Every structure is written in C-alpha cells, then in structure tokens.
Length: 409
Ligand code: PLP
Image (cartoon, rainbow, N blue to C red; front, side, top):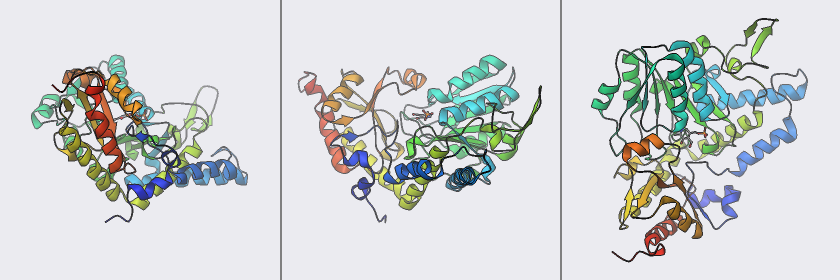
C-alpha cells in the first residue's frame, strides 16, 4: 500500500496547485515537481560551468553532477554500466542516433527493417530515411484494432532478411503494451537487433533493459517529470562501441589532426557539443522523485485511475473508445471519438470546461489510416490526477453532443 495518493502529491506540482484546469495531456508532456525545478535551478546557481572541459573546481563539480545523473539513469533502467547511457535531447534524437549511426552503417539492399504500424512518427521517419538511403526494405508489423500484435502477424513480418526491429513498448494512441520479451526473442532469432521506443512506458512502469534483453531503448525526460530537452538512449555496450558517431564536433574526441580524428570512448563519443547538464541533473531529480513514490505504486495508481476513466467512458452513449476494451491495457491513455463530432470540437468543448486534452493524429498517421479513423481525441492521465478530475472530464464528454446541438437520439 502506497504512503501517498494523488491528492497528497499534488502539492509538489506548483502548476497544478495554481490552476483549476484539469491537465489530461500527460502523454504529450508531464508536469514537473518542485524537486525537479529546484535541482535544475540549483545547478545553474551553484555548479554552472561547461562539463568535461575545465580543470577548475566549478567545471569538475558540474561534470561530477552530470555523471552522477548518468548513474541514476543507469540504475533506473538497470543498464549494466554508465557507458551504455547516452544523453540526447529526447526520444526522437535517440532513435535518429540509432538510425543514422547503426542503420546507415549496417543495413543494405536485401535487408529488412521491421516497424510496427503503431509507431509514433519519430520511430518511423528515421527508418524511412534509412530505407531510402540503403535500399533496405521497410516491413510493417500489423496489429489488431485493440493494438495486439498476433503471432501470425509476427510470422508475416519477420524473416531471415530481418536485420533491425524498431517497436514501441506502449502506443501513444491506444495505450496498449506490446509484448517486448516476445518481440526481442523473435528479433534475435532472426539475428536482428531491436530498438524499443519507451517514450510512453518509462514514465509509467519499471523497466529492466537487461531482463528485457533489448539492444537499444529510447525515452524522453519531459514525459517523466524532468525538464524538456533531455532524453536517453540506452544501447548495449558492444553495439555502441562498434557504431560510428552520429554528430561530430567538440567533446566527442580523443584527438584531432588536420584530416582525421580519434573519437572519445563511450558514452562521450555520442555526446557532441555542449551537453544539457542541467537537464540531466533535472532528470536525475525526477527519477529520485519517482523512486520515492515507487514505480510499482505509480503504475498501480495510474492503472486504477485509468480503469475508472475507461469504465466511465464506456458507459457514455455515442462515445467510442479506441484500443482494448480492457482498462488494464491502456497505460493512462484513452483515445476516443464521439459520433458526428470532430475531435477538434471535442477538444474545444472540453477546453471551455477547463479540461486540457489532445486532438488530432497524435503523430501516428499510419496507425489512424490502419484503423480507418482520420483523427481522435485523447485524454491521458498520470499519478497526480484525481478521481474528481476524471469525474469532471466524464461529465464534459457526456455533454459534448448536446453542446454541438444534437438531441438525445
Ligand atoms: N514515441 C512515442 C510513443 C511518443 O509518444 C512520443 C511523443 O509523444 C515520441 C516518441 C517522441 O517524443 P519526443 O517528442 O520527446 O522526442
């Protein structure tokens, strides 16, 4: 039993405390607790210097804090060593790093890249680029309407030509959780490497990269209480060591001559230019905050609130929930449509009731095409959201059609 609840943690979130609005766009970005704001501010007030460059105490201290943050991230996802943690700007940059460095160097015509139809554009467009540049073919793992990828769909996508698999752990539209252990096994049985997009899973569930056996895993700090502009790429050490740098320039070299350079060891080989040290420190503070709550407790609280939300939506006439009918397969996400009401109108009406949700294709156009729906409205909750907020949301959704001028039919 957790020693906290949504009500008791809300005092940690200044923005939430100072508004009457209901923030249900957490899948886009989370709110930030005071501990994260303080850690970021403290870095600039007490330790600000360029990391890894100066030999004077301030720079040494800044570097120590940056490297401590790497250790915190390593422990959070159970990576074997800090060299396997690369700081990036966000999930998008992490996945582009794998595409441009690993993909361009290792894929060729005749090879196949398997992506799922559930992917966010940031785990699709880099692979479209690699496919065009190398001649490797892009192959799609299809899914059922509830997001499930069946064994038959896997059989159809995987072959001896599969060399790279890029899949999301949690869909940002359906909220469903992909069976990563099975996908890892399938990928490895083909001799392929697998990249997992953890943008929507890392904030909500405990992740153990060694237990999962993934080769690469990407996530963003800003979706898990940390500042914007800091992200993570996990990669198995032997893979990262063999990969060429993605970006080149300062801080990622051992030595440079006129026509050549010797690159730095991991992880700095992949961290060219001045890094976001304050962001990394903020991410470490966010992880410490989550660890204090306990990821199991966070997960359980979010599952309970999601179940309440989903069941409420399922009882409103003319509302159609996307994805699984099972609330436990929604990871805080409820995408929906309302008969004869455009999702932008749903969002406008909810906004006028003080409720912030998202409407559109959620950077997942191929999934919407697959489902035959141009766009959806999406509510996404986090552990700091309350039952009272869900009640306000449900009441507003129940009134959408009336507000649009439809009768009770
Ligand atoms: N992957 C998924 C599943 C997402 O939901 C998102 C963002 O919404 C991203 C990737 C991209 O994250 P970022 O914009 O932080 O790079």
